Length: 337
Image (cartoon, rainbow, N blue to C red; front, side, top):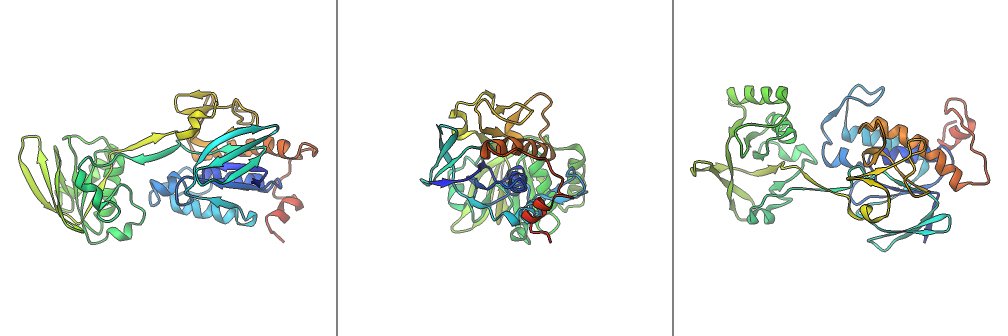
């Protein structure tokens, strides 16, 4: 049994900043995330896409933001439990007992749920032969765009993700954008750029059609498209990228007895506590009047939640608000001389 001041569920930007806010108050935390890497949606969905609404940072990618947050929390030496999912939460007097699918057990007066939209997985290609190429020639996200250089890439989808990656990858690869409808659903300015590339033969569009078959043994050689008029076309392809959206799943969170509104957790915006004392929800997964699903909103939410966590973790101590600019105690905790 591992005892800690707070258990953070979710290792995205808001979960990482929770470590900081708890740490400067002298609280220890551990982090559990069902993904195999730190960063949450920022790393899983848009590691290379720019973010423009982080205060004082005009532009950064999801990966850059994650790395900056990791640098900020380095003094606290927090333990991460990745590839691990919370399966059970149980009350134990003033504490919460938490069990994971890896049989780890934790006890803490505080749980901070920073799980984004819960666990998520891509909608996969329905073609059975696609399975054997997954992770080799068939992908549902781009982790490292360098692996896609100088390739023949077929991108399936009609939304923003498909259009954005078609634009990005066309800079160094031959890209064919394929959609089952004639119209795309992405942002108009992005679609305008796509059409210009098509006019200059720097990108190719195939609509309205769907994937009919994949040809190849260990690697994809070609794919066959089937149009609405039953016509078929074979295309040379090294890599398939499919962006048919994500299936969002709350998983066990929905079974923890918290007051919910659809797929979000209702909280008191005074301290972001849920309907259960000592369980807090922050980031995209929480809901309250005026809620904005922005990373910066999540940072504000954990700042307030961490105060209540302190009161629960150290009931015999009075919480004293301090500025990081002038507090010797906080600066010592951050390792500043």
